[in-house]
Length: 99
Image (tube, rainbow, N blue to C red; front, side, top):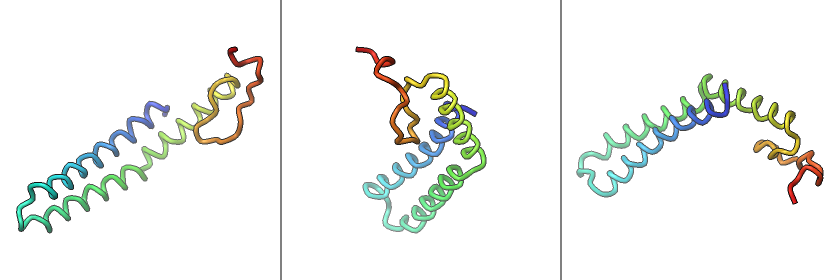
């Protein structure tokens, strides 16, 4: 798995959450008087789906793979950007940085 795979997995979660946002908007602007209970159930289903997708083995595998990819890239190019998961300062010396 790679950073691209992680982005794809998180993108799917984002799509579900965006669909949820559309339903919330619709409930505030056009929902018929008797539709609140049904809409609440729909929103709950989408929230559970997003949670399950985010906590899935596929997402965890993508996250682990992305972490390994970033760590390898940092080892290969110490003057590259530091890992987003790390707040440690770069190992880069001034000689590596452009003027």
